[in-house]
Amino acid sequence: MQRLTAGWRLAGRCQALTSLGAEACGAARECSAISGGGVAAAGVQWQQLRFASKKQGGSTQNTKDSQPKYLGVKLFGGQKCIAGNIIMRQRGTEFHPGTNVGMGRDHTIYSLIEGRVRFSRDTRTKRRYISVDPPLDSDTAAGAQQQQQQRLVPAATQQLQQQPAL
Image 1 (cartoon, rainbow, N blue to C red):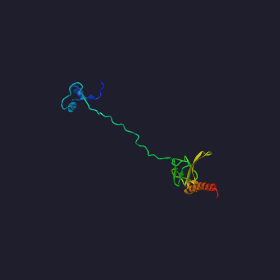
Image 2 (cartoon, helix red, strand yellow):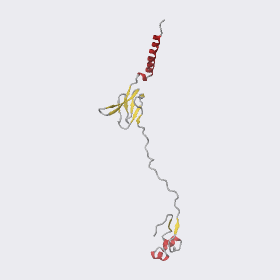
Image 3 (cartoon, rainbow, N blue to C red):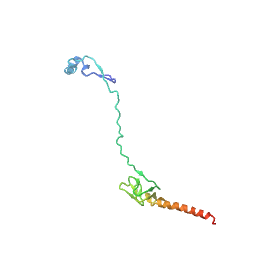
Image 4 (spheres, rainbow, N blue to C red):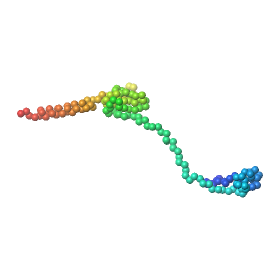
């Protein structure tokens, strides 16, 4: 038997049998019940079937992604921080807590005091540390005013010294 072409198929098992062949194989009753009382004519009949005209869209496997964890450095070296600021979020102790710094249950490193962040490395143990140095005088508002006054005072005294005495 030849291979069927797309869109066509045999009409049925009983239609391919002659009446003599159907009786010989015992399929006469079955064929008459299916075809509505008569035995199918000899030969093969073909009938056209309608197939789906659109292919089904493929399914994706990228839908089960986990939520982002937002790990990494939040405050870099030299930046100002206040007590409680998170400096780094990490998995495990990639960086260890140094001075004036605490470490949370999930290895989050946070500041204990106000100051500036400093990253350092211990060459002997090859560990990296994060510390917070206390604020300099210039970091505080009072220290900034003192520096400004110190800059102005010498300039004012120089002007007084340059004026000739009368």
